[in-house]
Image 1 (tube, rainbow, N blue to C red):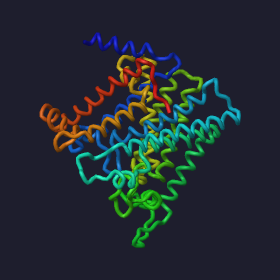
Image 2: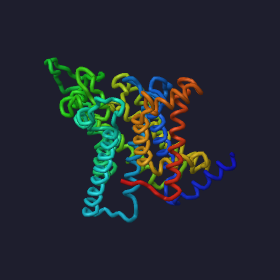
Image 3: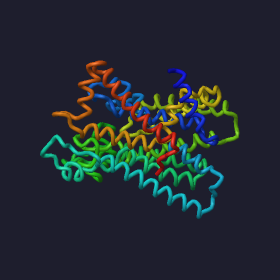
Image 4: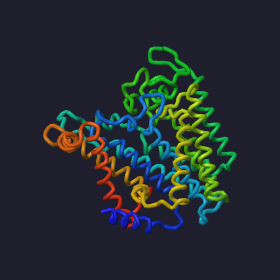
Amino acid sequence: MLAMVRRHCQHILAQLPGHRMLALDVLRGLTITAMILVNNPGSWSYVYAPLRHAEWHGWTVTDLIFPFFIVIVGISIQLSLAKPTLTNSAFNKIEQLKQGLIRSAKLYVLGLFLVLFYYNFRDVNYSYIEQKLMTLRAFGVLQRIAVVYFFSLVIALYCGTRGRIFAAIGLTIIYLAAMYKLPYQSEYGTEFVGLFEFGNSFAAWLDHTILGASHVYYRSATPFAFDPEGLWSTLPAIVSCISGLLIAQWLQADRTLVAKVRGLALFGVVAVWIAEFWHYGLPINKSLWTPSFVLLSSGYCALALAACIWLCDIKRYRLWSAPFIVFGANAILFFMFAGVAARALGMISIGESSLHSWLYNTIYQPLFGDYNGSLAFALSFLALSYILMYSCYKRGYIFKV
């Protein structure tokens, strides 16, 4: 059995193009795997603490997953711009912006598709138009990636290193100035300023005012409904992506792999230390995507990438990485498949319950217990997803937007 697994992993590694950065593929795969794992428990009532998001201020390992992906997007942008086929001409930049805008639009539409892909067949009174179309959530994971990708591409194309650093600092200052200084009012005329509370911040007020309470994730939040992937928190999310641009520049410089790993590790440790210290003044908060959260998540991403480079490229310990290469190579397809499959499990009925609930209550919970059964369900979901993703990988099919 072990020999078969070993041969399987060797076959995957043998298919890798020689020019690809293995560590980045592995980190992307680890990130998307973790994202799907935490999004698909057997029961949301039984999830181990590290696999949950922080209730508000603070963080868990799960809170780092999405910003890791954002940083990786920045790294990928910079690496793609360094291809020899690309030039720095104004015409070429405009063409790349057009392609980037199309790519962003596709990502945004895919995000909307996942929002709309649901129907409650068990409720005879369910109205798709009223309960889905009329309450369409405007933003989400893919929608945020779409917006962040495009604006980061603009910065990457037209700003050098100093410009990127100034852009990151400028966006951070603009974000904090509004969060701390701009007053806002509730519908009853109560004025607030400088709050970072659940449902009560400048970011929440902006979402509530522009997007509307029925088009955000936290619709029942008071006094303002808001979205964790909302409007104002997108500014520091772009800063996270810029950190990916700068990390990629460090990797592209003419230095040894050991020096690159040391630099990434140093940046990671310093960034995390500053973020944790800053937390006492500016709370680390994923939903608000505070600058302290940007530093924390970018720092840990740099540490994770350093570890992947050290393991895969310096020590040459690669067999363990094979499944994550498969998942990472088709990250968007994996995310879309997982989203559609999870919703389908919730729509298909068995008796009075969904297929998802029936599987957990009938098979996983009796066999493994509450928490372990919920985790086993998520792992089984990953295993079945791997079969499909490996089939695509083996045939060379990569879903691109």
